[in-house]
Length: 375
Image 1 (tube, rainbow, N blue to C red):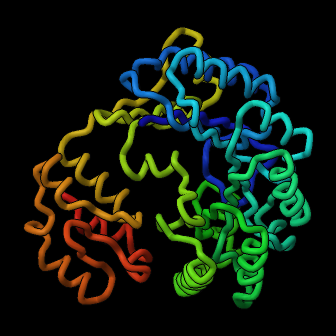
Image 2 (cartoon, rainbow, N blue to C red; image 1 turned 90 degrees about the vertical axis):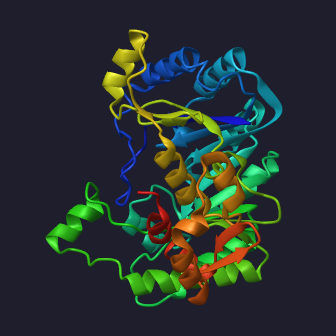
């Protein structure tokens, strides 16, 4: 099983919290699309001939692309790779882009899953985040998507947005549940340095996000979604029964994927590649027949640590037998005392051959993983 990720590095406007690679200047859009198509061809051997089971348009804002541009990229993939007839084809989109006409176009192209950047259903919070859409647009686009036959819908929500209490967050969750999306991804608001929020924090215009406040909202999130039938299968991802994101699950299970476009990452089980995060230079290098990436050859330590970091965030946890068989690493032998302590504190559970984190433990998933790393 393998996937292809396409990074579309353009947005209408910059959200105050976002530090992903994007540009609000779309002058190079056609050139970037053409370059991505060329890179798809250049990289055709990277996945070692595996069938493509997932295609994911991320960004940036892929819903800014025209129908012909999306079709061009999908046709390039199908012409150069064996694509499963049941492939999951996901497109990230902002609600304000998803007009009825746009949704008809996406459906006709074979897009069968939408990841919609709702973030909040509260207009004051949307303004604070500098989102381009309104709560009304968020509600209507989901209904319209279902009307054209795109029923596999994921929505993104952000928690820990500064507020006097938890009432807006609770209303956001209530509204989300009323829509019954198949999947919900929810992320804590993080203030990154090279963002508007980062600058405001340095200037004292906003306060840091309280860890306690964020933890309280995370607990509300997990309790409410669990009570309403959503399974938390990764720290930030929840779904109705069996409605996992196949593409993102492949990341966490360390399946192969090719990332094309500026700033995209790739992994084929042997190494990782990191494309340059510069649209102009990306286009220029691809024009010369060269993919401008940094190659990271993975050694035994890298493989073990990446496996721990990704799997501990999921409901499947760390398979101790797989770790021992594939990488000759006995995690229990290395960290028996630490793991016993995690279990005693009700942060983790050891069930036969799997080490998994409890809801309490998921609050510290990355810290626990780093403590278990092979150094």
